[in-house]
Image 1 (cartoon, rainbow, N blue to C red):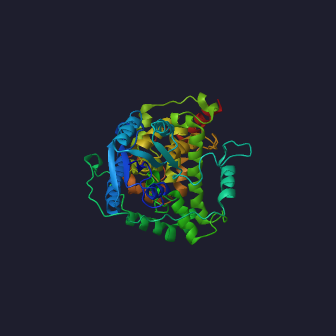
Image 2 (image 1 turned 60 degrees about the vertical axis):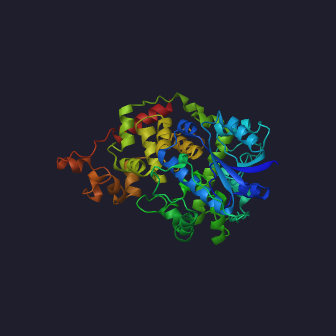
Image 3 (image 1 turned 90 degrees about the vertical axis):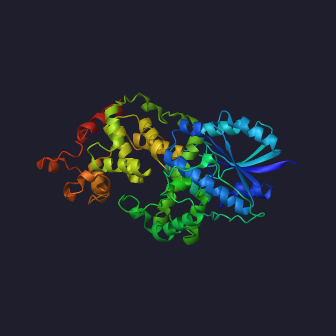
Length: 460
């Protein structure tokens, strides 16, 4: 008897997972997940994210078992050998149809192409996007190269659409036993991030009821919890992006029409996420580390390792940069405003190739996401699609004064500056030198000189 199964990828959710629901409706009583350690290492995935992923898969196995579904975890090694492993499993278990959600990176697309040629039907859904790549295009049928027209086109198609709140899976049989394999053992790196659905539901509800109405005013202040805190869950598909918009629409039905509202400012971030996914699908060179804007291929990056290491360690002598990098190193997460500041500092002040920063972020972030990470870094470096103009260079001192005025965030992570008064906290070197205090790092570059150097490099 031929069987249907579901293949989990980075869509680790039971609710709002249409591909999973369709698989079950068509007879699936089993799901698969592949452990691909070598592939993950190749993609520079962080230890904290992989631990988070494994904890979530182990949780899914238990939840599925209570619903009468079996989760099988297999060693997928890397994507080159995975199709053959899948074929072998399908033949041994009489599997004829596999349901799954698409992934849009080039290696994942190649993997699915190989899997579709195995003689097993692979039915793919667009479960990680609001609109499938290729559906938001110019009148000439091309991908938008500027975000604002993309957003307008997206809104013209979706402004009257009510996004569904995910359906809850019901038991389909008697609960079965399930024991997580050793490959899913946690090392504790991600323990501060809950993986249980009922806890995540509380986080979502708190954001929608208490924070989203103030999102535009608080999103740039790193000392308060003004962001959603949901990026790690979006990165692994634990929460569906359609679910978030649907939940916001339930409270604010016209959110896609009132584009100046605080609520829409969060939806706007989700559309940016969509934009980067569409770009990566249409321009696969972005997966390979190429500049989107080829005219910047001639930028002469200095790539001084000592300065890169100082940036990584949070020892640049610029407090807001150092606090941000230490937050990343200690927690596996960084506030979005700070990501822009440190990326601008690395690429413009230090003239270090954005790819170095992109790779370092992926090696540390719990919410590492290739499309968004690549898009953000190329935006900051002025090499990307609709990127920040090369002559706009963040001043880390004025950014610090604007978004952390009293130094609350800085003091939390840069303990050398705990006793520095607020008026000196943003660039404390003159204040510290007056007391002979040398505990804090000296600035590795001077802002004005670094800015002029960057302008000259990018003008070429």
